[in-house]
Length: 638
Image 1 (cartoon, rainbow, N blue to C red):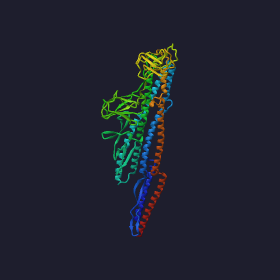
Image 2: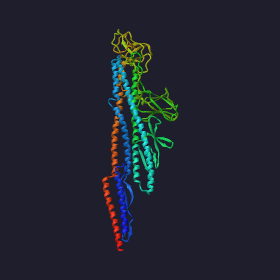
Image 3: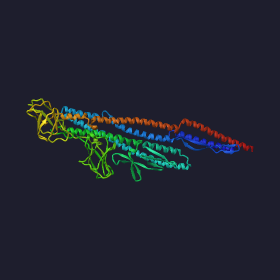
Image 4: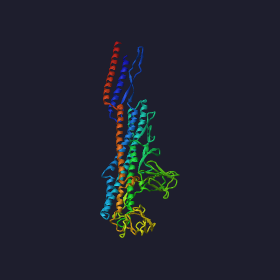
C-alpha cells in the first residue's frame, strides 16, 4: 500500500513540476513575438484491478500543447498581407500627392505666369522686356515640368530599391523557414512525435514576417513541414528546400525591376498582377496603377502644350519679318525593344493626333501574320496584315506606327508621353523671334464708297501655304452685281465672279478673312505682307487664347483643367488608400486580439496557475511523506 501511495504521489509531483515549468515558461515569454501559451495535457494512469474495484494509480502528462488556432492565424495572415500592401501603396502615393497638391511648387502657378507673360506681350508687342519676360517664364515652366518628372523618376528608383531589399528579406525568411522545417522534423522525431512547440512558434513567426512582404499560401505536409507558395502557386519553400526570388530587369522595360523565381539555372518572371499582397505587392501596384499613369499624364500635358503652342506660333510673324518657328521642343514617343528581340529589329513611331493622346502605354507586336498595336490599359487593339508604313500606318489613340522591321513573336513597348515632361525645352532664345504679329495685313481703299469692312484675318492651320504673303486684291464689280474678283499670285488665282455673302469666310493662299457691310461698285480691299508689324499683337492674342481652349481629353479639357484632373485623381486615390489602409489596420488589430484572447499569455491567469500548481506540488509532497510514514509503521509492526 505504502509503495502504491508513493508511486501516486511521485506521479502527482512530477506532473505538478511540469505544470510549474510550463507556466514559468509562459510567463517568461509573455512578450516574445509569435509565442503561443502552452499547457500540460494530463491523463490518469491505468487503474489497478482489485476485488473491490479499480484502484487509481495516479496521473501522467501526455504532451505539452500550445494553445493555437490555425483558422485565426490563417485569417490573420491574409488580413495582414493586404494591410501591408495598402500601407506601402499609401506611403508611396502620399509622396505624389504632396508634390502635385503643393500650391506654390505645382504646375498651375507656373503655367498661369507663362500665359500672363504672353498677355503682356500682346499688350506691348514691340517691347523687348515683355518678350524677355515671356521667354523667362517659358524657361520656368519647362523647369517645373522637368523637376516634377525628375521627382517621379526618383520615386521610381525608390520603388526599384524597395523591390531589391524586399526580395533579399524574402529569400532570407524563406531559407529560415526551410531550415526550421528540418529542425522540427528532427526534434519531433527524436521526441517520439511530441510537438516542438517553441520551434513551431518560431516557424509561424517567420511565416508571419514573410506575409508582410508578399502574399503567400501555406500547406502543412503530413510530416509536419510547411510548404510556402507565392504568386500563382509557385513554390518558395518545399519541406527543407528553399527556392529564391530575384529582382530582375523587366524584359519589356529595363528601367523597372520586377520579380523572378530562380529555378535551377533559369529565372522565371512572375507576372506582377499575381503579386497582390504585402509590401512588395503594394509598391508594384503603386508603380503599375498610379506612378506610370501620373508620369504619362504630366508628359501628355507637356507634349500637347508644346505641339499646340508651336502650331500657333508658326502661324505668326516675328520682329524680323519671318514666320514663327517652333517655340518649344516637342518630345518624341519612347520606344523600348523587348530584351528577347533581335538587335536589328526596330519600329518607327510618331504622334498623328496630339488631342487623342491618352495616359496609357502601348505594345506593338507581330505574331508572324498580323501586326498589332495594343493599348495596355484596357487591352483594346488594332491589327493589320500589311507592314505599317508611311502610306499604310497603324494608328490607335493618335499613336502612329509608320515603319517596322520586326521578326515573328517580337514586341516593342511604346510610351508616347512618358518623356514629355522630361524632354520638353524652350527652342527660342532670341526675343525678336517671338512671333506675336500676324503675317498679313488687310486694308480698304480710301476711295471706297460703300460700307464694306474687311477683318484682320487669320492664317489657316499648318502646313503654311507657300504663297501666304503674296499680295491679293479684291475688287467688286462695276456696275455692282454682288460679285467680286480676286487677283494676285496663288492657287486658283485670279478668281473671278465670286459671290459676296456678308461675313462669310474668304480663304486664299492659306489666309482667311471676312468682309462685312455693303460694299459699293468698284470698292477695293487688299491683303498685303505685314511689313514692319512690330506693334501687331494678333498672333500673341491667339497664343494667349490657348490657355482657355479645350485641347486635351479629345477637346474637353484645357492645359490647367487637365492638370487639375491629374491632381484630383492623385488626391482622391490617396484619400481612398488612407481610409482603406486604416480600416484594414483596424481589422488586423481585431484579428490579432482574437488570437491573443486564445493564444496570448495572461499574466494574471498564469500567476493564479502558479499558486494552483504549487499547491498541487505541495499536496503531492505530502502524499509522499504520508506514504513514507505508513511504510515505517508497517516496518515497526513487523
